[in-house]
Image (cartoon, rainbow, N blue to C red):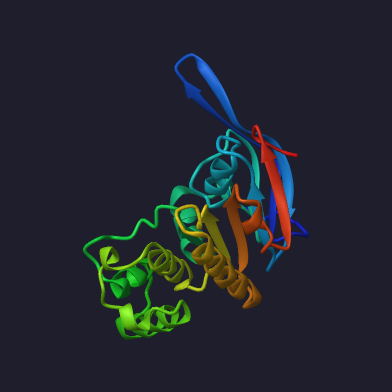
Length: 226
């Protein structure tokens, strides 16, 4: 469903409630904000503030209880399940805190994974994977397994996998949470360079130092923008 909007991403009166036994937990509480094309935004808040729920909802993975997520004039949750899967493949690159690499696949094979559901020919997939592995500085380790890499290198693989399909939006959930300070800054600088290349970057973090890399920070507390 197409809706006229002046912003690349619009969150309108968004709420998400979880039922835990007889209790209702309000993870997102009537949020409204927008993100423009090619912005670098951090979503900042303490653990339990609702920021990770918000990120998964932005990424078309977690249907809200009410409200709308509009991306490029598309009402994401008005799409069918199949259409949302196509939307994620075309628009979204995910970077997870726990990396979520397949342990028995090499760096090269992990990076190629998102292309397995596309119609891209295998030779072109190889070229694209090689290109992004070079971009994140891991050419010499392309055929190593994840457990042969440092934490920072595994995060770089996760980033390469997220960008291999050239999605306009990159969503990162605490991408530096398991890294030492120096490596964390390297990862944020890499995301900054991807933003300069035209990607819209949205990073969830609780670290004030990491938010300094963004052009704008959205502060979240108890499920609300504050």
